[in-house]
Length: 158
Image (cartoon, rainbow, N blue to C red; front, side, top):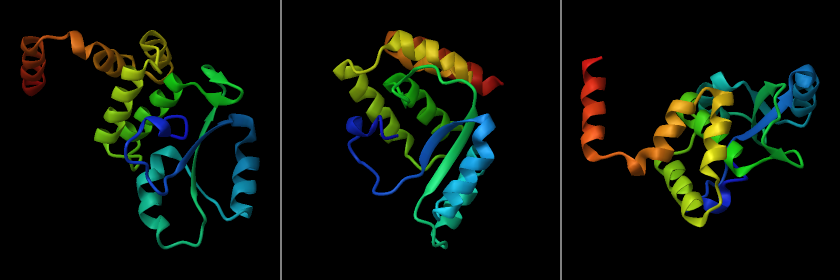
């Protein structure tokens, strides 16, 4: 989220930190963070952990995503496109505590300022199996109202 903060209107005072780590180093990183009184959680347990966070003495929450894929990074920091994909995934799939409206505003600001390459965004979305969602978002300005209505009708029938 730190990569995207400059595009947000309402910056949260405190938010869980998302960290991608090498799978092989998972246990060691968990151990180090817990020694420093930092709460560590898995992405799928975020909602539950965040709800209990207020009752602990930990300084902050870190969400660990073990991976072997570090594409779309510069100097060990995610590119804007990768950061958006990761945050979109966390918000829509793992209940990361950020309003979807704020994420949409951040995306609008990035697109308006030319801070995000939409082709790279779509390409990066394949790594998270979000290509349909991201293509829909990127191409939504080209879709007619009739097509939106048609798609909504199809979804209601399913």
